[in-house]
Every structure is written in C-alpha cells, then in structure tokens.
Image (tube, rainbow, N blue to C red; front, side):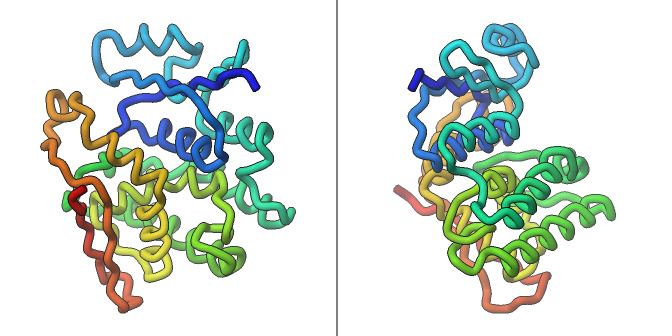
Length: 245
C-alpha cells in the first residue's frame, strides 16, 4: 500500500482533524502525520501546499489527495473494510448520524469550541445550545439501545465512523460540563478511556502554540479520567480529572 499522509491542525483545537486521525488509528492504518499550526500568518499558504480546500484535515495516499473529514473516513472504510457496522440497518443509521454531525450542531460548535485540554469552563446556556446537547444525548441513547449492547461503542464492539465523528463532542462536553443522561455519560467514559484518544490528548497537552496564543495553561497530567455518579438524573455531572503520568 502506498504511504498515507494525514495533514491536520493543532491537536488541541482542530476537531475535524481529530475525527480523521482517530478512524485511521482504529482501522490500524499506518500513516505519516503533518501538523499545521492554525491562526498564524503562514497557515493558509501551508494548507494550500497540501490540498485545494484551504482546510484541514487532508489525506494523501500516493498521488491521491482527499479532503473533508467525512470523505476521508469513507475512504479509510473502503480501504480497510473497517469503520461501518456490518448489518445494513445499523450501517444506514451510522451514516445518518455521522452526516448529521457533519452538517449540524452549529450552535454547539460556535458556543463550545473544542479545547481538548481545558476543563471546568462554563458559558451561559442558550435555548439553541441546549437543543443541540439534547439532540446529541438523544442520538447516543437511541443508538446504544438499538445497536450498542455488544460493546462500549455506539454500535457495539466495533469502533465506527460515527464514534470518530462524535469524539470531539465528548471533549466539548468534558470541557464545558454538559448535563446529559446516564447512558450518554457512560458513553463519554468509553470515549475518554480510549487509548487512541488518550494519545491524542497527551499530544494536545504539549502543543506550545496553545500557551503562546490561546492562553490555555500548559500542565503535565497525561490521562483523562471520568467518574460518573450512579444517578441517572440529567442534572448530575461527572467528575472530570487528569491523572499524572
């Protein structure tokens, strides 16, 4: 197989980069990684040197150049046979909720931008933001109930494109303290304990651009931990912490 190269943005902030990166890792694909710092005078020219869209992520496979997270995930699934559930109904639903994440939840994206290593941030809740949170909670509950009994992921034992698409949402909920159902909290725990996500989070911690330009303190814990209460009440919050390495 020709060498794959994934061009991504700053790991602490680039949610779309995270999606493609996670699926490649879970599919067992070896790839070279190129990280472009975002929001610098050179960013636009650097991205244009790899792909035509002006955005990350970008995947290069030999002479082929692909862009857009969902398109990259589809290609990885075709390449490896991994990424979508095997049963037709589950696969169709997985594509639907992945597309919904790809095209929707604008209020969540705007009001709760991804910051992988920040925690205990609070913002004013708006009806539009609350609606996005409730819809995501509904998606996770519905899929886990219908398809997820065989394992920790949305569709059971196999990690799918849908899990990759919603992983940045888990980090957002982690950062801003979303009030969600028990089922959603336990799904969050599975995502935060994922070895691939843990590796990504450790790398986000040491991105010095964050401290210089964005003001997020650099610290040294290396493992996310989520402790959830037994209560199923939506207002109950999980305790989020970092464990030292």
